[in-house]
Each structure stands twice: as structure tokens, then as C-alpha cells.
Length: 115
Image (cartoon, rainbow, N blue to C red; front, side, top):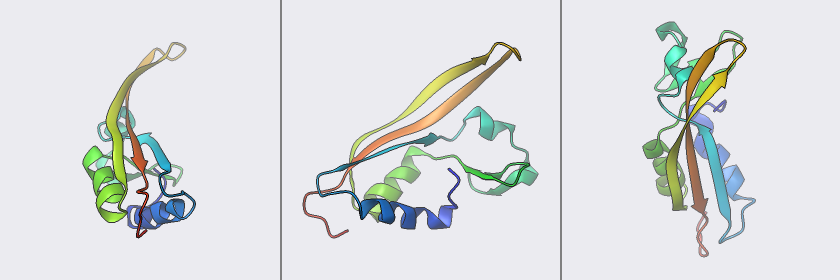
């Protein structure tokens, strides 16, 4: 989620150089509507689902549709699994409940690949 959106396709292509045909790419990262995203203010927004934290680090929150476009349409992978994982994380010390949302995907590199 720290990779800038305009560099994501290059990052996936770099991963694919190391994956054998028939091999898998496992992906899990923050998804849209994660509580961390909802806590960002409008002035921290850099773009669609893309934010900067107070320390200067950046966060991107993925959608399943965006991941499908990136991995399947742009990079030619086959989707094996794509789902959202929702968890409630409790911080008993601070008395906080955070609703976390993760995009969880498994993609397969085709046996015959032009990648």
C-alpha cells in the first residue's frame, strides 16, 4: 500500500519476472473502507484511495475491481480467489475497536504467458 498508484503496474511486472508459469501471486493489503482510511482527513488525500500520513508515509486502499484490472487485465494473470476479509481488532488498553478491511487475492500466472 506504500507504492504510488502510477508505479503499481511496474511493481507487479517485477514480481512476475520471478514467478514461473503456473506459479501463484498472493496478495493481501488494506481495502477500501478500512477504518484507517476513514480516519484520514480530506487534506491528507493525494488521490482516489491514496493518502499521506502525518509522518509523510503514504497509504493506498485497494478495491477488488482495481486489483482485477491491475493483475488480470494489465498483467494477464488468472484470478483464483478474490475476497474482502473483515476483522474487528480490539485494543483493550486504549479501549478501541477498529474495523479492518483487507483485500485478499490469489492469482496464477498462465502456463503460456506473454508476460
